[in-house]
Image (cartoon, rainbow, N blue to C red; front, side, top):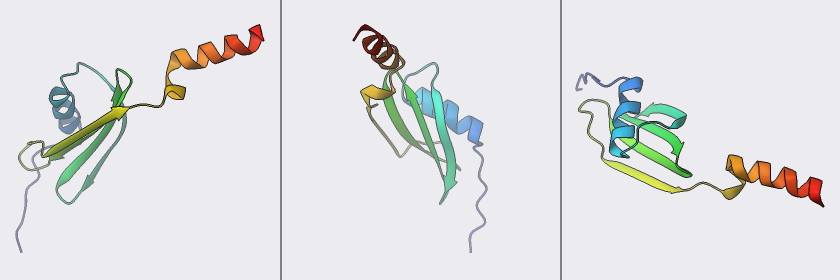
Length: 87
């Protein structure tokens, strides 16, 4: 049995994820830990990101991103409200 020391905290995993995505800031949805990896989920610039950060080394073995649904854009809510009033 190997005793593994995890050097990367959740806060550091968020910073690493932002750096990997080349972002200065984001809205974090969740940061969870499983099997030695931090799973960092966040949104920025109308994209939804999932970044995996190795809790021992800080390396990023994978990251995905996809557009967020249009209905979740703040401007879409304002447009829908004004369209309802205008109709």
